[in-house]
Image 1 (cartoon, rainbow, N blue to C red):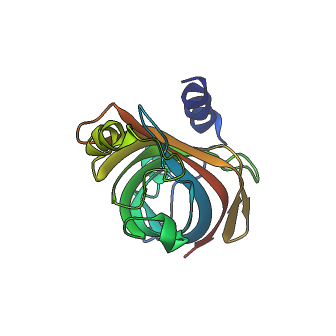
Image 2: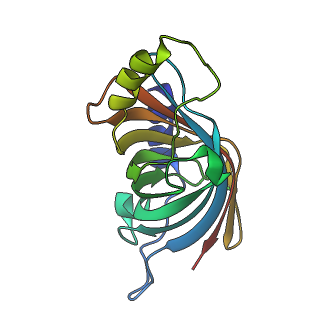
Length: 191
């Protein structure tokens, strides 16, 4: 919450930009990234999975708040595939960005469809089959997450990012299993 208030204040205090020239193109970019994620359930977590991501984001306008608000989507491929149910997931994202010099933090909301997480297989308890089966039934294919990327830096046409975090429920039913994703690195090229 503090990060959100801080980001909104950054957008408000950012250096004003002259009004765009007629026909100025809308900002857009493609990115690739690497992240680790897992599902945290009531009984046990999922296996930790590393994923490779390709995404596209586009600003909603060329002036005012719309130039800081991006929408887009992408795909993630999970490695190793032996730790997954199905190694591909799709997502859509909205993101609010603020640029202060080289620094360009962002935060937003992401929804997606994923069957990547495979329940943790290392615990072998005689009574665990039914117990863990109940936990697996609470892990649906959809997720909604809050996304925060405080360490992004703009260098010409490129945006380089460090640690990012996503946290949110998985379902249906939503609320009993959480998704935690830690972005390790990201490179975005503005088109």
